[in-house]
Structure formats: C-alpha cells, structure tokens
Figure 1 (cartoon, rainbow over the protein chains, first blue to last red):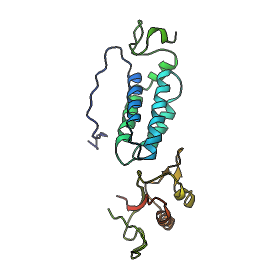
Figure 2: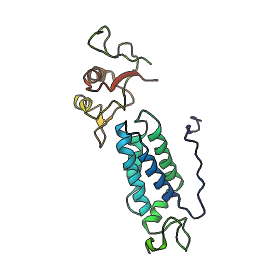
Figure 3: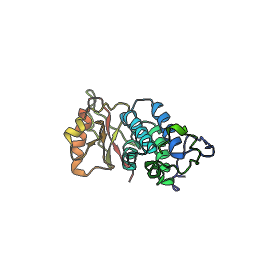
Figure 4: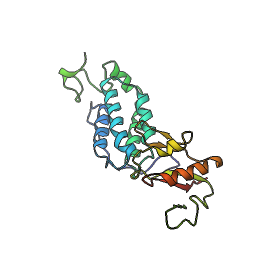
Length: 128
Length: 86
C-alpha cells in the first residue's frame, strides 16, 4: 500500500447525496475532525482548527488553497497518532481531485449545485 | 532504534552514543513549544506559527553536538536523538 502512496485510514465510506458539494462536505468533515483532536500535540491542537478554517473559507469562496497546502505540511507526521495525518490526507485528496472547485466557489458558483440551489445552501443564502 | 537519554544518575553514555545516522525526534505530547531547541540551533530547528519545532529529516555531523545539547536541556524532555533509517 505504501508503494502505491496509500495508507491505512479510518475505513469510513460516506456516500454523497446527489447535488451535495464535495468541497462543502469536506469542510464539514474537517471541522468535525478538528473538534475531535485529543489536543495532546501542539501541531494537531492548533493546526487542525486552522486547516478546518482554511477549507471553510475555500467553501465560502475566499482564501486560497496555498494556506491549506501549507497547513497540510505543518500537521503531517507531527503528532503522536495518525489523526492529523489522516485529516491532512483527506484535504490533500480534495485539492487533488477537485483542484478548481474552490475557484468556482470564489465566483459564487458550485459544480455540484443545480439551478434550484445546492442542498448545502438554502436558496436564500446563495450568492447571486 | 536506539534512544539514549542522559539523566542525573547514569551519566555513562553521552546522548546519542551509538547512533549511526542521528536525527532529532520530537515527542509531540511532551513538547510544550518552549522553543529552547530553536534558540540553541536556529539554523537547524525552525518553529512553526504556533511555536512548535520543525526538525530536519537528518543532521549534518557538525550539527550533532548542538543537537545533543538541545536534547539535554529540553525542559520537558521532549527531544530525542535517534537513528534515522537510511
């Protein structure tokens, strides 16, 4: 697995409902994982909330992925357990798999949303 | 992996004696971000934006003496000199 660039993970598969935005869901999950940090190691205690904030900002259409990439480097392999590593890998796969989604959000658009509005955002909250 | 630690009673071995390819390792739950390692070796140990050390993957031979001193003075004993796999 290591040779293929893979690692053991949490083993959780979360199917997305049709129209759900990958970026938005990842922001929610990273926020949850940041809350779940045991808080024993400084880089995880400080880094995961910062990472969650950076992804949340990408979801809301501001901020740049550079900050997220910087935080990925600052939390990876800098804890006693693999919680920060796994969280960083999730964000890394988001940035690899959907490298342009946050740019769309920056324009007030979303690849996954329909003309009726994304299930993530009530129509009243959608930006134009 | 060899871990040598100097304490007050058994000063038989120097920190890192027997380590072939030394590197610094941080015991993250112990590290409180005091930053003494960075103060001792600003060229080797950087600090992240929260004050926690960023240690290199390996040490040059001329850095080992300072690294040994940093391990010795770390106030929470969070720094170790270990053998890095080549």
